[in-house]
Length: 430
Image 1 (cartoon, rainbow, N blue to C red):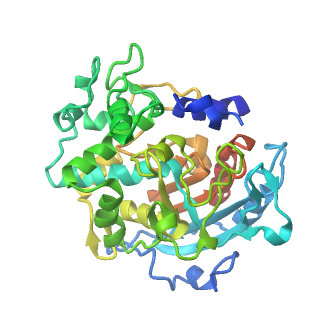
Image 2 (image 1 turned 90 degrees about the horizontal axis):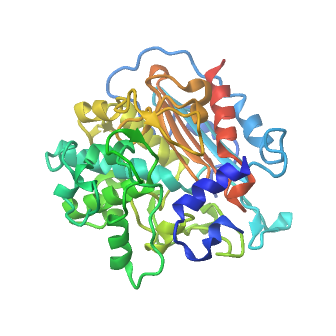
Image 3 (image 1 turned 60 degrees about the vertical axis):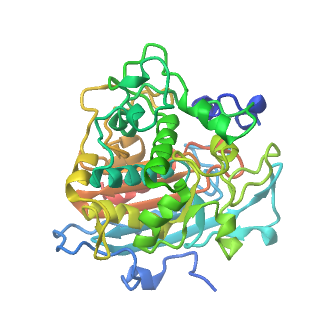
């Protein structure tokens, strides 16, 4: 299992120096009664009545989260994570909001901190979302499609002429969103003088040998990095500002953004990730090495958020593109985004050899490897390398934000899919 975990990070960090990362007065932490009663303004239900659904069983979630604070038979050598937050909404109302463990348990080394020096996990803690960032980037692209600025079937080179290389003229915007472009997992960003040269390397990353654009699912961070550049070019704003102007501000999300050290006032809310001596303790600094080298803002990684804010993104999509009386996406474009565009295609994923290619435009679809028993043809969501995930089950009007710091102090210590499946299975009631 550990070899599998290392393979993904090693691929993403291609070209990183010495392959460092491959080696080496608030809400209570328990269920918040006010939120559970639906008193909080976020999340909100759709403007149309939700169909009656069977309530999900939430009582088993906290015991499962607590279990992985120690080694378990399915993760015997180390704790699954130092801490976790789970926020579950159904029909737009919060039915569970709970936190366990610690936001910081180790210092660089890693060395376990004395109990008095650890930072308790809070339900309003702010996590490094890692690849959940891709969902935000995808939503910005879909907004551009809504406005008629972007054609999903147009070659990306139409908008970004510097996207060059053999057979890359056939890569479309939709291919990048669905991970069928043929681009590899990661890009080389080290050994360059400045960010201009680094981004030139990203844009000229060659396709995998023999890849045919549109034919095969291969998970690629490069594709979403390119889409981040597309957003920047067509909005005229840097990606962090585009997220702020087009998503977080309209949605009222004050706990979401890139580079949180610049905007989080209470630093005790920041959740730690790595604590190995290669980069020291990471807390409020992006864990993804490529995003870090690029300055902390990229289309594939770098976003930080609280569980509360993550559920709003899920509710936005569940509501058909509206939230709080505001429409951010048309129902038509969102429906297309939540349709399996990879039906019948082959999937190549060394980390998860049994996975299917099922994917929408920016989100995973019907993937039991992280959705567990909540997987269904209409279920959608995404995961993040640091231990984060978002899952939406429309048939049950369900949104689940599960945020853990499994990369604290070392991402090779556990497989986050184990924890995700355990929680989702408990919520399934089956």
